Image (cartoon, rainbow, N blue to C red):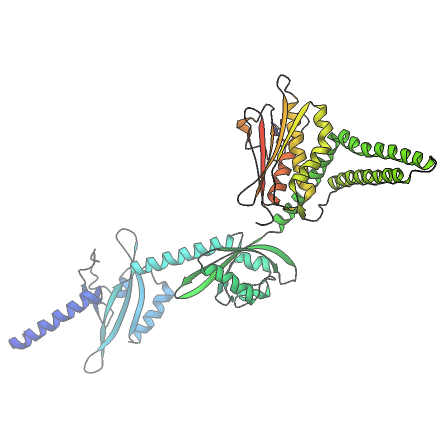
Length: 501
Ligand code: ADP
């Protein structure tokens, strides 16, 4: 038997050092170093001790005898072609079962080795464990898929834009609502389907966004088939990978608009019904207001006739009587105009209103109603700035508050029934109107529901009076609220911003 010649010590030392360098290299670069022979049998395997669990050695087995979970047969067939052709390979990914029943992913690279005569003697290579990165990749893919599903199932249209507005990505809802394919929308400018948008408005919206805000705008989108629908668009700008992007979420508000329109119509109907009902309640007053000037006119006309019949006719007295008739006719005309305006469905034009004056008009109309119920009235009207608004609507509010107070007080018999209407000018320029009564007051448990539509405690109430008052005051930029009056009763107050504001 031949023994290998002893190497000289310096060569042995060099070899040892080289071997150590090699181990360090493997240790920190790869988890496995391996060698196979010409039959692809493992003849050497070195595992880095950075591995938490050492895989079982496969020395003596061929590659095909080692159990693999991945790749599939087709993947192995291709790999085997590479091996049989003695070609180098790089990052061939495979998975082995772990004792716990999981998968260990390895990425393997190998180089064929040939001896001096050029004969293939095997492969030498390394393996890297890629289970963690593979898992992370899978998790990311899954989370992306989940996110995509979520985004695709969202009831809003998601549109991602670059800084110039160009569409970068969309969800399914965006495609469905606009009638384009995803590819059709990507690269499109939003000015094409958003009818309210142009380069200038886009820029304005972005300026708003750059301040870190979310911009919400109403707009109209045009579908591929040319039909148009209203949308509410919320936009937010963000930065990803150094690129600024804008995400817009649009919601089809056709239904909401329709409901709002229906509600407006219904409210207008009810407001009209409420006004008509209020009118019904004060017909006695109105009749009085109209009949008074008519009676006066009759008297003056009779007087005029007798001045005319006297010898000689007293032209001075005649002129005076006719002037009275003109004044009274005007007054009766005004009352009728007011009633017509109150009963009319559509609001008149906005105008500058002297609120004190408007209150006095209403008080005049309601006077005999107050009298009939034995209610005494006190008015404290301060000098006020003018208000911009709808005179008849504000008068409707005051009339409603007066009639509610009268109704509330009608059950009080043992104490005086007092109604006090006051106005105050605020330092801010706003004005405050208060209607106080000495009735039973408000039920504190239901004070929040007073202004709800259809809230009523009256057997024949509709419960729309205060709801309508509230919406009128809000539409004028003011606020209406209720509270307890001192020493008893209720107080309803509202503010209105002045024209100066
Ligand atoms: P309605 O008069 O048809 O009931 P409103 O909206 O005008 O409808 O009033 C709602 C409810 O608010 C009334 O039913 C009543 O209970 C209460 N309310 C309104 N005004 C007064 C008041 N001055 N004093 C006490 N309760 C009041």
